[in-house]
Amino acid sequence: MLSKYEKELIATIWERVALRAEDVGAEALLRMFTCFPKTKTYFDQKDLSPRSPHLLSHGGRIVEAIAEGAKNIDTLATTLAPLSVLHAYQLRIDPTNFKLLCHCILVTLSCRMAEEFTPVVHAAIDKFLSALSAVLTEKYR
Image (spheres, rainbow, N blue to C red):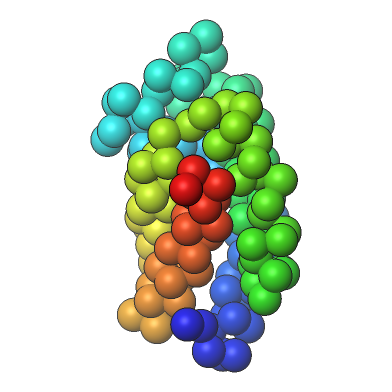
């Protein structure tokens, strides 16, 4: 699936992205909520305006979890198992939302990384986010 080079690339990128976890995560969430309004149903009582405390906080937690997964890419399923259980059994999030969020994260990173977002980087991050989405949805089966 991912080559050694791609794994190293992903770990390096997510280490840098984690430094701006709240900003990147909030932007990706805002993109998702704007492009796919039905995803907002799980956040009925929250302020989802740009840069709101809730959006920054939740976005930061998402990016930090992804960065942790990138650090432990060879044990991704084990690393993210608690999140998979939480989202499947307690929060009952529609599993399609993970793919939508991963797409919005990819777009956010492409905008923020500009020249660094080469086709190789794009492919590696896309593969990683697909694997992440699969791990988060495996408890739904």
